[in-house]
Length: 149
Image (spheres, one colour):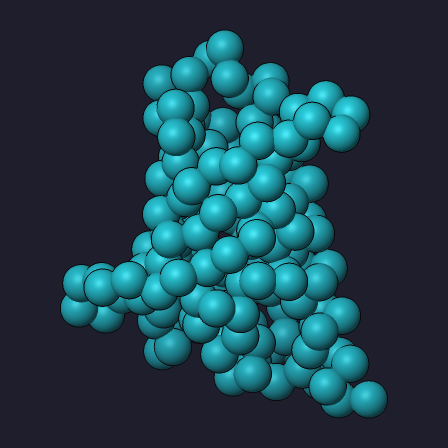
């Protein structure tokens, strides 16, 4: 399974520590990642946070399917980075990181993702994953900037 990568970047008018805290807390992904319908934190190894989640994926028109995910977050405050690994059904894997840096009164968030799945699934999964990750960053910006206002 060859992987395919993509990145998105956004500037958020919020302190780096606030952005980092939001992305390092599993339950806060509800409302950020638009496909998620539930999140339940589970035990994780040292230095990690993990959760199981349910997502609703649109198939065709009003038809959708529910899919379970297992996600591990590895926050590193000193590096301003939160690595993640997501495992879904049918061998779909996403790995990557949120990299944060201060830029004046903003925090720049770069979201890098590597998708691994079988070739026959890639055409279905990749555009949905890209849209979901774009929406996650837009929702993060909206959430955090509304706190400041």
